[in-house]
Amino acid sequence: MSHDTDTDSPEVQRRLLSYVKPYRRTLAFALFCSAMVAAITASLAWVIERAIDAMVDGVGHLNFLCAAVLVIFIIKGCFTFGQSYFLSLVANRIATRLRDEIYVHLHSLSLSFFNRRRTGAIMSTLTNDVSAIQNAAMTLREVVSAPLTIVFSLTALFWVNYRLALVSLIFIPFMAVVIDRIGKRIRRSAGLVQDKLADVSTIIEETVAGVRIIKSFAAEPHEITRFSEENERTLQTVMSVARKSALLRPVVEFIGSFGIALILFLGGNTVYNTNRAEREQLAVYTRQYKSVAKPPPFVFVPPPGGMTQGKLIRFLFLLNEMARAAGNIGGIVTVRAQALAAAKRIFKEVLDIESEIQEKPSAIDLPIMAGHIVFQNVSFRYSDENPPVLEDVSFDVKPGEVVALVGRSGAGKSTLVDLIPRFYDPTSGSVTVDGTDLRDVTLGSLRRQIGIVPQETWLFAGTLRDNIAYGNREATEEQIKNAAYSANAFFIEGMDKKFDAVIGERGIRLSGGERQRIAIARAILMNPRILILDEATSSLDASSEALVQEALDALMKGRTTIVIAHRLSTIINADRILAMKDGKIVEMGSHKELMANGGYYAQLYETQLKGFDV
Image 1: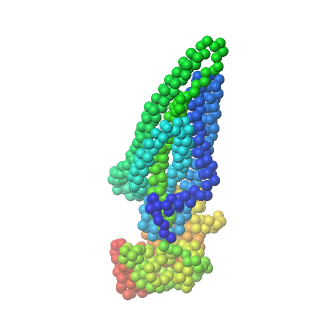
Image 2: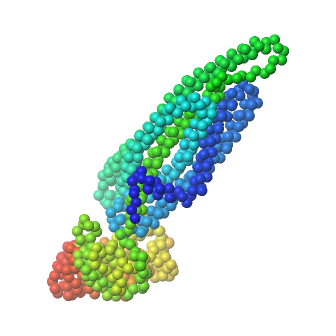
Image 3: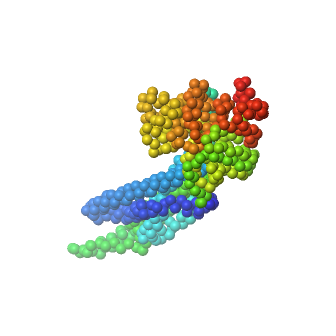
C-alpha cells in the first residue's frame, strides 16, 4: 500500500489526525477549556473598563469589581489546568501509540530493511520524530484558543467602538502575509532538522557499540571531532529554523504595534473630546441649577462616538490580546512544520515499508518436522543492482544429518543458511522442509523449530535465566538448569546469584566462551528440529572452544544440523561437507572423500594446516 507522504499533503495530515480520533472526547474537553480561557480573557477586559470608570463612582463599586477580578482569575486558572492536563494526556497517548506501532512494525520487517537502514536513524524515528509530533499535539490549545481569542476580541472591539475596530482591521492582512511567507521557509527547513537529528543519533549509537574498537585504536579524538562537527552542522540547521521562528512573532507583533499606536492616538483624542464634552455639559448644568436648592443629579450624555478612559484601556487590552494570539499562530506554524516533517519520516521510512518476507493468506502451520531440507536450483541476490550471492545451488540434508559448509569469506555460506528460517527468500528456485515450500508455512511455526547459534552471540541485559529461557518462556526451573548444564555452563554455579545474576548489556560481564555456552543452552531449551551453527567457535580460545564444542556435540545429536566452519578440523566428522566458491557448490562429500579428490576443499584444508586463514 502506497501513501502520499509529501510534508504538506492532506494525506499526511489526515493520517496524523487518525491518531487523535480515539481521544477525541478528551481532546474536545481540553479544547472547550481552551475556548473558555479565551472567552474569560476577553471578558476580563470589560471588568477592567468598569473598574477604571468606577473610580469616580465610589469605592464600594470598585471593591466589588476588584473581587470580581479575583474570581475570574480563579475560574480561568481551573480551565487553564484543564486544557494543559488533558492536552498533555492526549499528546502522551498519541506518542505512546506511535511508538508502539513503530516498534511492532519494525518486528514485522525483514532483515533487508535493517541492512539498508542505519540503527541511529531508526532510533531517531522512535525518539526525536515521535517527540516532534508530541510537541505539536501540545500546541493544539493554541490552535483553538488563538483563533477564538481573535474572534472574541474582534467582536468586543466592534462592540466598544466600531470605527476604531475597522481601523484595527487594516493591519490583519499584513500579519497574514508575514505568517504565510515565513511559515513556508520554516516548512522547507523543518525536514532537514529531523534528518540531522537522525545523523547525530547514528554517531552516538556507533560510538557506544564500538567503544572497545575506539579505545583500542586510541581514536577518541577522531570520534570527538566527528561528533562535534556533525553536532555543529545540526546546530546550524536547527538555528536556521529557530531564526525564522524567532523572527515571526516580533514581526507580527511589530505590525500589530502600528495598530495599537494608531488606536492610542485616535482613541486618546476621542477620550479627550469626550472629557471636554463632559466638562462643557457640567458647566451648563452648574449655570442652569446654580440657584436651585436641590438640583437634579447630573447625567452626562456622551457625544456620538464618544469614549471613556475605561473603554480605551479595554480596547487596547483587546487589541494586545489579538496581537499576542496572532504571534502564537506564528509559533504554531513552526511546531506544525516540524511535526509534519517528522510524520513524513515515520510514514515513509518505517510504517509504509512492507516486509519483503510475507506470509501467504493460505499459509499453514508447519507440523513438528523431521528436518529434511532440500535446496532446488536456488539463486539469490540482495537487490537488482547487486551481483548474485548464490547461483543455482542444489543439495539436500536428510533428517538428523550433519552437513558442513566451508569456503572463503564471501562465498555465500551465511546467506545460504539465512534462507532456511526465511530471513530472505530465494530470487529463484525453492527451499523445502519435509517436502513443503518454506513460503507456504507460517513464519512462527517454522522459526520455532530452528535453533541458531551465531558466531557473535547476542545476549540481553537481563538475568542468565531470562537469556536461557528466551526461546521457551514456559520452561521450568529444572529445564533451564538442565539446558545450562548440557551446554557446559557450570560456571553459573560459581556466580553470586547463579541463574539470577544480571549479565549486563550484551552479556558484557561474561567471557566470550561463557556467552557462547549461554547461547547454546538457549538453543537446547528450544529443542529445535533443525540446528544452524554459524562459525560458533571461531572467536574462542582453545580451552573455551573445547568446552563449547563438547556442548555443541551434545546439541547436534538427533537434529538436522548445518555447520558453517571456520576451523576445518572441527567438521571432519560431518556426514557431508559442501565446499562453496563464489556462490556455488563446487564440491560435496565426506572429509575423507574430498581429501582423496585433492580438489578445492583439500586446498583449503592444507592451507589451514600450514597456519593460514581460509
